[in-house]
Amino acid sequence: MYNLIFFLPKFSLNGAGKSTYRLCKNLDKKKYNITIISIGKNSYKSKLKKIGCKIYEMRGETVFFSMFQISEIVKNIVSYKFKKNIFLSSHHYTNVSSIIFLRKIKNLKIVGIERTDICELLWYDTFLKYLKNILIFILVKIYYKDADVIISNSLSCKKDLIKITRAKVEAIHSPSFSYYFPKKKNNFKNLKIISVGRLVKEKGYETVLEALTLIKTNKFKYYILGEGPEKENLHNVINKYGLKKKVILLGFRNPKKYLKKSNLFINASFFEGFPSAVVEAINSCLPSICSDCKGGSREILLNGKGGYFFKTNNPKDLSKKIDLFCNKPRKLEKKIMIARKNISRFSEKSHLKKYEKIFRKI
Image 1: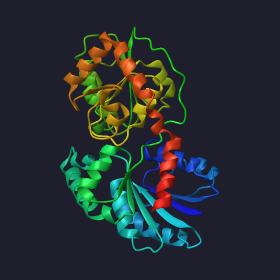
Image 2: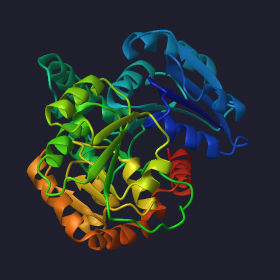
Image 3: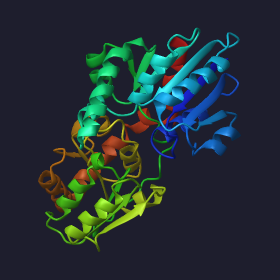
Image 4: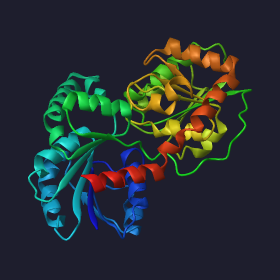
């Protein structure tokens, strides 16, 4: 039996939390003993307990200071009775802390999981964030090679990590769907645009809002699904552009039914890891336009064969792509159907097989 210990600082309902839950749900509990550690509330706690996982919710506020207690927990969990003891952490700052604190524990394999491209650390909007990111970047460069393996969720991220850190890196795409949705017929009479993701600056929502002031049609609705610190600022930008009646902030919702009602998906991120929302949009047969940023978007949209790209943080170029879609919607719809035929590699089943292969190899 394998002994798996997952550590996520924030175990929320989306992103890393969602991916980790899907992996744990699909792992054979006769083969795997699973422990989950988080800082603060684990949003999947009841579901994880139901499938036999042991849960620890740390009371600390920061990863670094929580690691003293976590290292003691790990020492008590690690045992020679298991075939392998494997510690899996997520996000660069957590991975670095895990390597520093846990590397000396005998009979423990350490796996770091990168959720975004390393270029995230070169993006900042305040001087304090600049200093923090530079420090993490230096630590990543020094310590990643000491992990047994680093897992990236896109080939682009893998390439950059190997170049910067010289670490052993494997790419495993996020588990973005479990089955194909029934094909739907899109109605292109009224433009209904949707974006899904946390309300943070790097998601590029302001780029989309400015682009909507430049498009030729005035008959549209734009739905944003997500919560985050930029919510109040986005309300201000919406009012500034006179889009109050056109843009609806829906908060955190299950995107499935909203994807069905929409006819265009936009991802305007400045950088990405692996945008599962784009896969969900494609699975819903929803024509998609993505920023040409670092991350997994190019893999999902087959370098443009499966969708449109626009220059990152460029509202004018995005408005042109929206206008192109409005003039010839079927052209982009055909591209999406090509992308849809190739999303099986992003399934939960594929994700599970690749992780189990890593567990056997390390």
